[in-house]
Image (cartoon, rainbow, N blue to C red):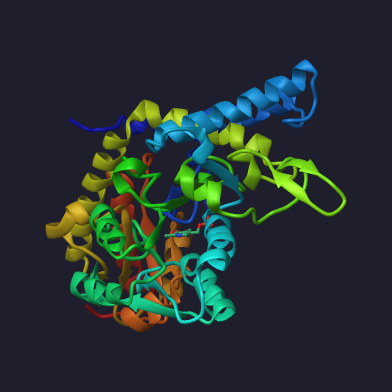
Length: 414
Ligand code: PMP
């Protein structure tokens, strides 16, 4: 039995009724950002029409309603990822801002000259560059765990690199290029054995599979609303309460304080200590609607659907003569719905261009993972298709047909 009623789901997404270059839109770029269902669009519109006011300020009814809605979305988020309370849920702009916040606030307070920071070769730039800057600021060393077979984290190398007792170990749950699903629980357990603090980049996992931060045991987890049906401009920094209590604020201004005097201030309680100034209230409300939508589908079903579709796509692609990167069909349990590939004789951008002419949206480039794409996969750029709840086998068939079209247009012999 199909795990999701995709045809019913598709009806909720107005953009899927549109065309691109005269063809029905086939959207295969959800790893970049997801499309939005009418439930999310309507929630944002309804807020503007009926409940718009700033939060935590007015004592009038409208402001109280807006505040209550905002807090409710935090409770939803906390429950969705298995966090104990919304005190652990800080809203920022994005995964990127969440990681930067930790690198700045936690990093500057805890990393000293001579310390090590450990990340992996499969990270997105947003989980590389903040640590490079921190290492430079503090005189620390940034180490990288190597990959095994250009697919998986090399656990022997990981074990060896942990011997430097890194202050911070930061890694992605799911690679946005390889689609590899890492064993977060095991990696965190190993990092804690040497007293490291752990940050998990969950930008590509929370939208696509059940994630429970209590099982993960990581101190910090970051992800973005826009990749999980919600609006842009809302990112989540989950932090274990006792770690957030210790961490100094990184943005300063209104609302994050308890009291302000001419020279000194004291901080508000969690999570408000980290949310300075007017927040993206409408974004948070839309995000709440997105979480409700995903909860109704069930994250096990979301994962099951994407697994089935990815397996189908990998099998079809194998027959079309392209090379797919990351775990293959036989390793499907460790593969999310992300397929980057290459085709001898065709540049990634040319492939994406032909796809575009066919109405198929795929991303092409280094996918903000230049070290992985250029140094590990040794490609200047790769096209990538990525799936979500609204994609179906018919769309995969169209993508595979577009590969034949690439051959035809570029006059590539088989
Ligand atoms: N990490 C990973 C693995 C990602 O795929 C992305 C988005 N491509 C990010 C971090 C950054 O997310 P955002 O752009 O929402 O900050």
